[in-house]
Image 1 (spheres, rainbow, N blue to C red):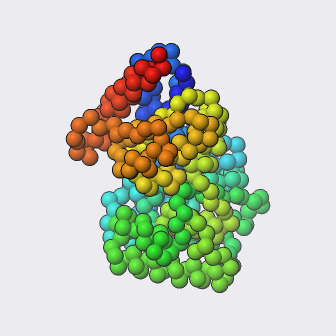
Image 2 (tube, helix red, strand yellow):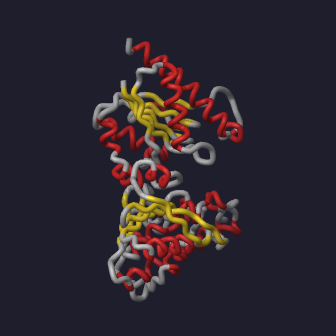
Image 3 (cartoon, rainbow, N blue to C red):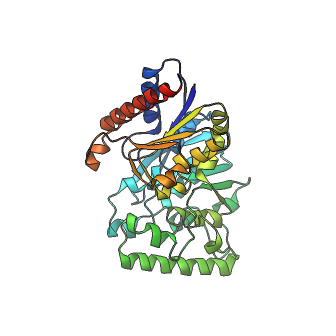
Length: 357
């Protein structure tokens, strides 16, 4: 029996490779004849570069830039041939701040643009930007500013280059730039914005989109994903870039289809499986890919907040790894998480073994 283990990171707790290794060890402790393939996985957010680096040949590049509060930082992006892969969250991630109304007003995407410029100056001709996990709500204006974008002409630093550079934004968010489903209204609260700040941000975004349309005929409001990452999706489009599904692109780079075709069972998971997971998050996306090859999928998650009927549409079974009532603080402890997922995986394998006799 061959099992593919590809679990997304449990944010703030354990990485994808660590979870995969623990589950693989637990499965093999029950049946040493199993063939286990582990794949670090992500959907364009936290952990995406680690997942890529374990499969795609390349090397890391260090860059000095600034975070979302303009504090100097040094981060790494990944380079494969002429492609550069940059994780927005590593530079302007929400995990770098304690979100409140002050940080909401100050947060800028400027530092991300500096990293893009560094990659271009080092020879990259295709920049792929993972848009998940950001803490900014500036409409991508800091990013545009750092790349010298002029919305009156639609020209930027990219237009001054001798060779063309392609920008690709990876996101599974489909929100428009402004309005009830725009970046401010939907994501502003979790980034610390007060009601008045969110209303003001949305109005500014609306005005900006109208000005851009008048000058360039680009209608940000009609582009799915323009509201991703606090408006960075829209900024990438204004620079001539395109947006694509984060998970689908990473699955393509990892050649995940080949692994799915050759396995008998998939074990995946994430920190919290909820209704948002159905919008391109790793567990559901993998399960739907596996279904094309009639391969069943089991999800092991930190918590499960989805109805059984909805889960059954994609999964053979869904389990929470928790062994008893527990506080969130205790639940996300790395040692506890790895212990719990090992116990659950071993018990699952014991059950599966009974049906394979």
